Each structure stands twice: as C-alpha cells, then as structure tokens.
Image (cartoon, rainbow, N blue to C red):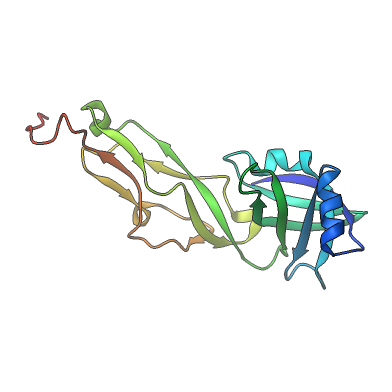
Length: 191
C-alpha cells in the first residue's frame, strides 16, 4: 500500500476561535490518536496536502510529520462543510507495525461479463470493504473478477480471496450486480 506524507504543526489552543483562524488561513485542524502513540496530538496541516489523500479512489497509509515527530497513521474520518464541501477536520489513527488495523479498501472490478455483452448494466452495490490486518499486508485494492456474471447475477464478498488479511464485511454482501434493463425484462434472453 502506498504511503503519503502530511506535514503538521502542533496546536496550542483548542478553542473555537483558534479553529476558525486555522481554517481561514488555508489549514485543516486534525487530531491523531491510537495505540501507536502515548497520547493524542492536536495539530493543523495545509489543506492542499489532503488532495492526494481524500480526493482519490486510492487508499494510502499516512506518515504524519508533526514538527519533526513521525507518526504512522491512517485517515479514520474526514468532516466536510455541508454546503461548500470544504474539508473542516481530519481524524487520524496511529498504528504500530505489529498490531492489526481496521481499514476500508476499495473494490476494483476486472474482466468482461457475458451479462454486459447481452445488454446488462453493471451496478455497484459496495465500493469499499472493511478489512483487518497488518498495515504492510493490506492491498491497494481488492479485485473482483466478473467474467462469469450473467444477467441478474451478483458477485458477493464470499467469492473473494483474502491473503494476509481478514475481510470484515459480511460474506452475503453483493459487490456488483449485472442489472437487467427494462427492454430485456420479460423477453427470453438467448444464450
């Protein structure tokens, strides 16, 4: 999995006025907590550094450089303004190399479905899966091969192979389905 560096600066004041000032200067207030560090650290970071972390379908491990202190972490939650969708706050969870972490990994669809060739539509049901494993063992994405999916069929979590990590999402959850368009419903589909 790819690692992204974010540079941060410690916050002394945690009141609302200082949060407003941090945001007005183009920064994002953040906090990092978890088993990888002795106590939580409140810091802020330039908003531009979050572009490659948040506005991408890929997932990254994060190396936080907070005034020279390096903390390995994952983005746990990002809060956005309800109207402008500006990033308002980011929570990071510090981890250690020897303890498993829970993380969401994107699903990547591969292969050509015979159902799509017959006029079906690929419908995504779940785009990310919850997994648990050591940070170095987690993949960039989980591959779902739809080469055997016909019209009306689904690819479920139970059909995935997980090596080196555990999938926490229920095995009965559908990842993708080949939907039957209205024009084909009621007609007998020729093989």
